[in-house]
Amino acid sequence: MTLHDDIVAMGQRALTASRLLARISPRRKNAILKAFAQEIVKDKAAILEANAADLAAGKTAGLSAALLDRLELSAARVEAMAQAVRAVAELPDPVGRVIRRWTRPNGLALIKRRVPIGVIGIIYEARPNVTADAAALCLKTANAVILRGGKEALRSNRAIVAALNAGGRRKGLPEDAIQFVQTPDHEAIRELVQLEGLVDLVIPRGGEALIKAVTEHSRVPVIKHYKGVCHVFVDESADHDMALAIIENAKCQRPGVCNAIEKVLIHEAIAATFLPRMAEKLLARGVELRGDEAARRIVPNMRAATETDWTQEYLDLILTVGIVPSVKAAVEHINRYGSRHSDAIVASSEAAQTLFTEEVDSAAVYVNASTRFTDGGEFGLGAEIGISTDKLHARGPMALEELTTYKYVIHGAGQVRS
Image (cartoon, rainbow, N blue to C red; front, side, top):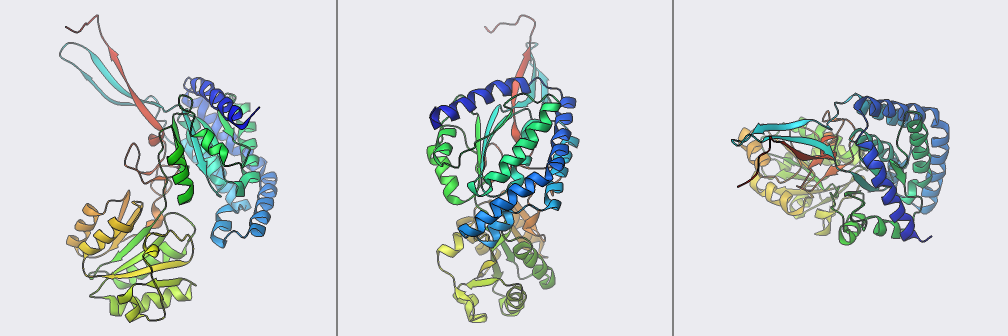
């Protein structure tokens, strides 16, 4: 059997499973989710052993420290993975929820109701916790899922999927509701995104090359978890200590994630006093600074920023710094160079806050807070599939509601259209 045949067979099995999932009660789904969590904890040693092998291979392959951090599982991270699954079980079930109901003058009664999407393909890199999060969210929303993780986490993902299926079978999980593409062959991605009629939606999350490969070849609708070129703009009205704390957190707490900032813009009126303090703080944390000409006149030891720097997602302790003359200029810069993910303003001026929040075209726009909060859990949505930088049909953290669509159910009493 060829790779093409294998992937098509997976799609056919997933379609069958999705129709069975659509009939499972919320109580049964929650029981399966709790069994997922129990089995993850039970299989913790096997998962950590598999992850250790992935980490060793990653170090040999020369993966960056940031990527290794995303790949690494500890006992605490495995427990957190299980807890995230339990948290999904506690969330309200969106499937079957009535969005709207109304009656037409001719007596037709219409109901707009949430339903599963069907079969979802999720293509991701490096982070094995995505495997459990994606499976849990798809199960809660009665979607069958085909997972294709990165080769860096192949062993870890296999161990996690094995645990999920073992736990799920005990509580009636339909066969093939959770499938994992076992091969690291990149051709498998191309085959998966070609499954028109079998897969209803593809969600890629990873580097720019992965996103482009998926969108270029897909015959299935795609929602992109695109790169996180996130900004903080420090306005002339900003509290300097607050701005320093926000920038340090947004850059340094976990630099290898998509909601960490990659750029800082500073109002020219405060740059001479604020930038040296920021540079001192960040250099002490090991951050490499790259600046435009105006920034380098204030802090000369910064590396000169290139045009490429403004669009690059480093996922590392690197930060590009620019000086701008106004809030409007900051907005224009962000809309030109950003990735529509998460951007923040630090300001006490309500006028500056309003202009920024109304005109920055991003999924999440912050006032006086770190961009690190762009996360399903931090938003109170539970676990997430990813952060959509698209505008249709989901934007921002993709949690339960974003993994459903809707249908219209119409009740009549023999009406016909004239």
